[in-house]
Amino acid sequence: MKRDSIYYQIFKRFPALIFELIDKRPAQVQDYRFESVEVKETAFRIDGVFLPPEDTTSRVIFFAEVQFQRDESLYHRFFTESMMYLNRNQSQYNDWYCVVIFPSRSLEPSDKRTHRIFLNSDQVQRIYLDELGTSDTLPIGINLMQLTTASSETMAEQAKQLIQRVKLEETGTLPKTEIIEIITTIAVYKFSSLSREEVEAMLGLTLEQTRVYQEAKEEGREEREAELLKVAVPLLLKTGMSVEQIAQQFNVAVESVEKYR
Picture 1 (tube, rainbow, N blue to C red):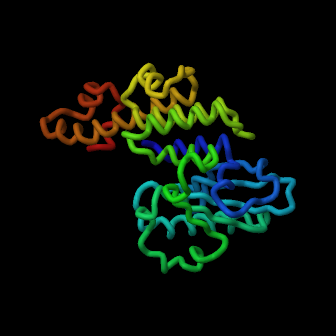
Picture 2: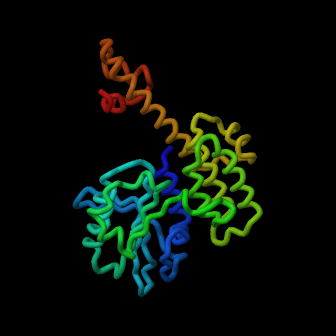
Picture 3: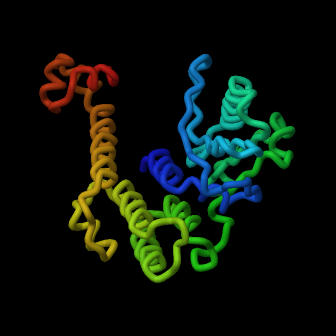
C-alpha cells in the first residue's frame, strides 16, 4: 500500500489536519499550505512541509514525516533535511516544529540518544496512531489517518463506519465529498486487485470515476507489475531471453526490464 501517496493526498487537501494531532496551533491555521520540497544542493526531498501564509507575522514552519516501516536512520535523515531547509531559507521563517507520525511505537528507531536534543525538546512531537484513542472519540480527520493502518480484515468495516460518520456529522472545513473520496482511495490502495464494482459493494456506496480513484488504481497496477518483473526478469534472463524479448513478453518498456537485470 502506497501510504506516502495517501498521506500526500490527505495533507494536500486538508493541511490543517496536522494541527489536530499536535499541541501547537499557529496563527491562521486554516491558511497553511502543504508542500513536498526538494533541497537541491543535497539531493534531499522533504515529503511534508507545512508553510504559513505570507501575510502572517508569526512564521512557523512545520516539518512532518510519516513512517510506516522500520528505518534506523530515520531521525538522522529527517532532522538533517529539516535543518538544511531552514539553513537555505533563514529569512523566511522565525520558528520551526517537527512532527513524526508512526502507526505504533514498535516502528520507532531504537536509537533515541543520538538525537535526544531534538527528541526531548518542545519543538519535536512523536505521534503513535494506535495510541490516540478509539474511532468514536476522535475527530473524523484523525480517523481518516488511522484508517491507513487498518488490516485487510478490518479495513472494510472501519471504512464503512467512517463513511457513516462523515454523512451524519458536521465536518467543519473538511468537505464531505472529499473525505469520502480519500476513504475510497485508501480502500483502492489496500485492495488494488478488486474492481470498482467490488470496492463499491465493500464500502456500500457508489463511486465516481474520479481522478484520484484512477490514479490509485494505476499505482496499484504499477506496484504489482514491478513485483512481477522483479521476480521474473532474472529467471528469464537465465533461460537465454534478451531484455528486449522480456519487455515484449510483458508489454513494458525496455527500461522497466533493465532495472531488474
